[in-house]
Amino acid sequence: MTDKLQKVVSATGEQQSLTIHQDVKVYRGLLLAGQTLNHKIAKERYLWLQQIRGRLEVEGHSIKPGDGIALQELTNLQIVALEDAEFLLFDLI
Image (cartoon, rainbow, N blue to C red):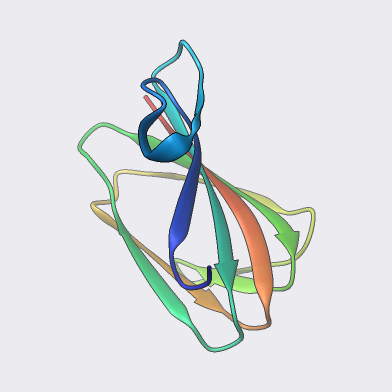
């Protein structure tokens, strides 16, 4: 599945994700080069994006494998794949 986020961990086990007893959601993202992903963010949530492979542009910042980026005070996150890419997105309080 590309150009969408796959929920892999959540507090409720929704969408067949693993259950964790914390207020956190963890998503796996796969994008092909040139694809753009927009993700709405609830108020007062914080994000951490951990790059696994490929290169992304995240809110104007270019990141490569091994990089992580903390994001806050956003209502929408835009991710652009500069190359085929895989990443994890943590949605935290």
